[in-house]
Amino acid sequence: MLIKKRTGIEIPSSEITPKSIYLSRRQFMRGAAAAAAGGVLVACGAPGAEPGAEGETSTMATGSSAEEGFVQEAMPGPVSSNFDELGDPLNTFEEITNYNNYYEFTTDKERVATLAKDFPTAPWQVEVGGLVNKPKTFGLEDLMTFEQEERIYRLRCVEAWSMVIPWVGFPLSKLLNEVEPTSAAKFVRFETIEDRENMPGITRSLFAWPYVEGLRLDEAMHNLTILSTGLYGEPLLPQNGAPIRLVVPWKYGFKSIKSIVKIELVDTMPQSLWMKAAPNEYGFFANVNPNVDHPRWSQATERRIGEFGRRETVLLNGYADQVASLYDDLTYDTTQSG
Ligand SMILES: Nc1nc2c(c(=O)[nH]1)N[C@H]1C(S)=C(S)[C@@H](COP(=O)(O)O)O[C@H]1N2
Ligand SMILES: [Mo]
Image (cartoon, rainbow, N blue to C red; front, top):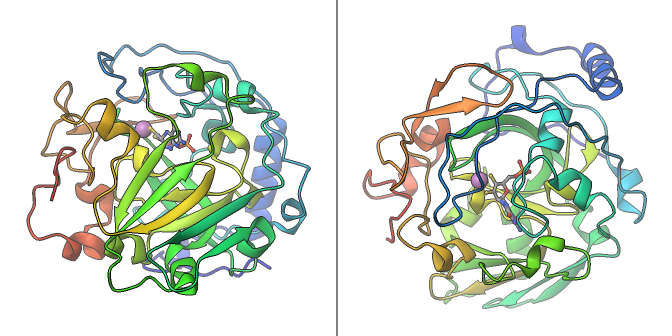
């Protein structure tokens, strides 16, 4: 079912690892609780939080694929490469599934996997409506009828750490085209499930739940913008936003909203959870920009999870060739409002 298709990404064939090697590597990785865990930065910019206090940990939770729901068996396996378009190695499955930001569970990145382990992700529905001609509620089985592609993207958290993740998913534009946005639609608003019974972090009154994010319609329609249903050829685990989450690789990670239940086409800029929490720190656009610091820390460099030392942050997270034309000027500010 998975049709490998790499869009907007060029990889020298010399860098492509044969599937057999990839698979044995993956089996190895999943069997071993290896991988030095990433440093611990404080939470995704909770007001008053400060990044930089890094500590090491070796906590490793073992992820198990969600068994419920038809989708999960349908998830295809192959992944085509261990490298993304800048030649960086993939982060390990263990790193990607054990170092997470998912405040509905906890602000402790190392504990999300454990707390989210039994989070029910089936049955699941995504209601798509608002300014569209054909509103539709998609069951997970409907979402899986979109051709699933592999997309290896860098994820850059606003806290100044990053990973390289082999997502599986499909362009959001395919779903939006199906519901036919009207000419009045200018933005897309996304909402995460608000499951107070199964999300222990949601009681914190610090935030205006549910988690909400938004994109301008042209950003949402861009081919790099995907809805992800899996990673490393496996169905998403709850800590990564199962069963379906957004991935917008040129924006800070908080834009990539998890466990979506509602998508609405609207005519005014949505107010995200982060805009409400700290409007001067987390703006609507949140495009990755090494030249615009967060009010409380520098964005010039970042820490790749699994590496020592720091890397330079890349403008638009390395996707400038594809997306710079979406923006009029170079104020790719976290607080940019227009
Ligand atoms: N619903 C929801 N989505 C969310 C978050 C969250 O707390 N809740 N955290 C965001 C942040 S800050 C980041 S960096 C990414 C992390 O995604 P990952 O854990 O899959 O790497 O998810 C984003 N999506
Ligand atoms: Mo983040």
